[in-house]
Image (cartoon, rainbow, N blue to C red; front, side):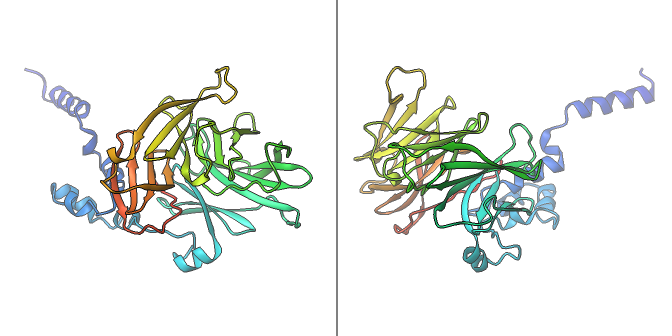
Length: 340
């Protein structure tokens, strides 16, 4: 027979080793916060057991768990004031980036933290045109309080140029990369869609089939990548996306189908694009629904939003399953938000 003290220690050690992750309240709270919001899954989760019901009804559970549908860049939660002042630019890994012509705001809806950053360009003469901007968390930090803002500008003298802000240093690095205007680009280049992060680079789709604008975060360089020769020429028919192997990819709507392209930099072909697969739209959309444009994309979950003549559908690109999310057809721009 083991001594009572030793047996107690042995049982305690065994119990600790066999403890299930869901027995940890903090882990379970993190899961509950991330349950699908529409319709809310929390009422059903509260029926699992008394402990789950206690956590769901806990006032300390982040409000985003119970009301995650809407948030505002206005500090007081006023949506009308937010839309009147701020322009929503993009979302990336749980961070929302807004712009009001004088400053940027980085907002983390899950924690409520807001970081306002003055624009690197104080005065804006007529020849200066702001193009777009993106926010990315610092690589491998795991802390959403650490981020970078990449702001793109253009003027008739220098061409296109990028400035980078780091939350660690709290300062802008001005004109870290310059892209002279030539036959491939012009002072009127426009970016109409949010950025997409693929690996260590940020990509924007340029209008009028000018190509894809790339900012390499490691090299801090700008470049323009030509589109596949056979891809549609209209910006709203294409979406930049990462491929399964983490390379630059492109989804393109064609007649009654969606094409998936991948760029391979080691190819001899000048275009460097390979058509990986083509999926007929009637295989993932209801009969009679024709896709009209791509209106949004979430790079974390690989979900795209398609505007069709019978509503807006969310399409899971890994499985090509779809779900109707909006009846309206006059929707042209969706910025999905996700936090993992």
